Image 1 (cartoon, rainbow, N blue to C red):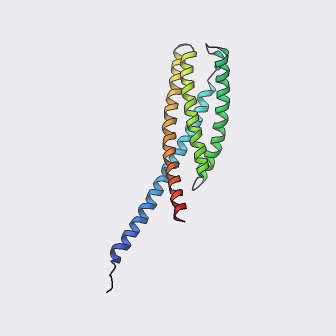
Image 2: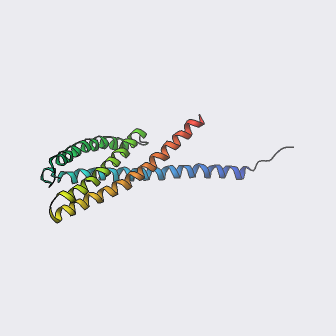
Length: 169
């Protein structure tokens, strides 16, 4: 006895599965492209904000002023490094997971530093201007954290796909 296959059902279903996977990948690529563009904006915004920070004029002890200046130097170097990885990722058809991880890590570091600077500027810089500037840092920090979360989801999805590919081999 011969079992009949219903190719008229199987073939369209197969095409639909392939099309759905391709559409999901294209959407993921679009989302990643937007996230990377936003990451560049966020890192540029960090640089814009820290240019105006004058740690030496803060009404606090010398140690905190020194740590402020040192923190800006260290995080700024990380931002420069992340921008290099970001440019590579933006040009690549399929960005390196290592580059995405470096960008994610720097977004998190930058967000934390922006939050710290926002608190310190509000506390140690005189007047209403200090509070307004502190608010700008805090707002940039929140946006950068959200962006980092979005990149984390993309990175996690890509790692899961890579893991599945390895298991299939």
